[in-house]
Amino acid sequence: MNFWKYHGLGNDFVLFENLDGSIPMDADFVTEVCDRRFGVGADGILYVCPSEKADYAMRIMNADGSEAEMCGNGIRCMAKHLFDHDLVTDRSMTIDTLAGVMSINLQEENGVTMVEVNMGAPELDCRRIPMDSDGQFLDSPLPVPVGDVMGTAVSMGNPHFVTFDDLSDEDVEELGPYIEHHPLFPRKTNVEFVTERGGRLYVRVFERGAGWTLACGTGACATAVAAALKGIVPYDSPVEVFLPGGMLRITVESGLRSVTMNGPAEIVFKGKLMR
Image 1 (cartoon, rainbow, N blue to C red):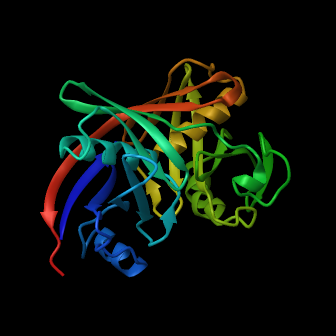
Image 2 (cartoon, helix red, strand yellow; image 1 turned 60 degrees about the vertical axis):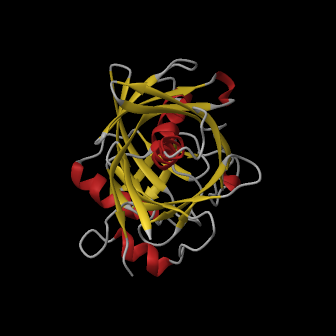
């Protein structure tokens, strides 16, 4: 069972070509492969699948065995794989996800594959994020053990809660897993803790189903959307979003018509799973 290990800013994935549907996708298999001591080790598994709506389809399973609708770092890694292995011969391609069909362009910068993804329009309606609230949740108080945390709920195909509150490291460590399972988020949520300095956004992400991660592409997009709504960063101009694993450039189109993400994707190694 051949696999490839990729990462986007340290957010790492095991990729399988599952074109004939023979690769398992159950939770036991996923958690076994993603285990960093007894398996290959990864934040999740990417499955390359056939699609009638796009060049290929991507399925993404988190390290805990749950399935995510979308993964920004993962889709960049999959796009690199498709091009490098001649599954797609054009640097422009489409990939079908549970969050919709994404349009992608690849470039090379200093030997590193840079991938630009049109992530589509963000969703702010709470019921569609989903969040058990009506209307929009914009810079509003979320009740947590340390009191209310102000934040914005955004979906980039998957749910995010973005806060710019000045919190201690101890509070951040406690609130990441707490907010992920907050009762207002019926399908759990990713959580972004953001600091703005000089027009740049610095983010720590607690990723739904994976825990603290070095990077989260959809999280960077949700962060830029929340920052634009607050007037912290401009629309229609690339914003540098720094995560522990590196930097992504995110452009939020005025009117929230679309969000564009640009960042690297790199191969780590190829292997064969014996089971």
